[in-house]
Length: 113
Image 1: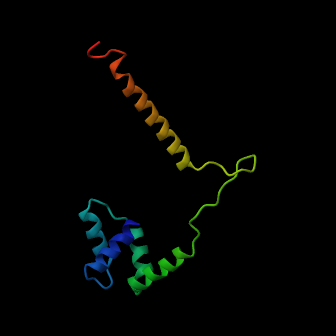
Image 2 (image 1 turned 90 degrees about the horizontal axis):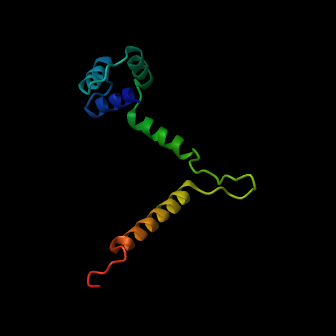
Image 3 (image 1 turned 60 degrees about the vertical axis):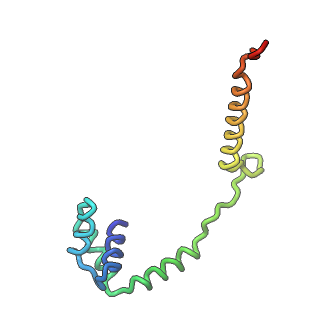
């Protein structure tokens, strides 16, 4: 991923078709040592292609991917509880504990008794 990002940065910087030295310079500027094989592979795969067209093709592929998860069922056939619902329950329990502790601050003593 870092090699593709470096390639895109080089294109955004004005290089129509970046070479290995360009990618190595970009990666080296942030302290990443570039691996020659990966740099060559990225350049060979992306050379001669328009970055805008590649991004458009990627968006089309991503839009066709299913991203939602169906409700899973527990052993009884009922939908399993969502993790977010469990987190809300835990947060409510913590809130209740905080409230009960604040009520005990006076410890049964009144200031003017």
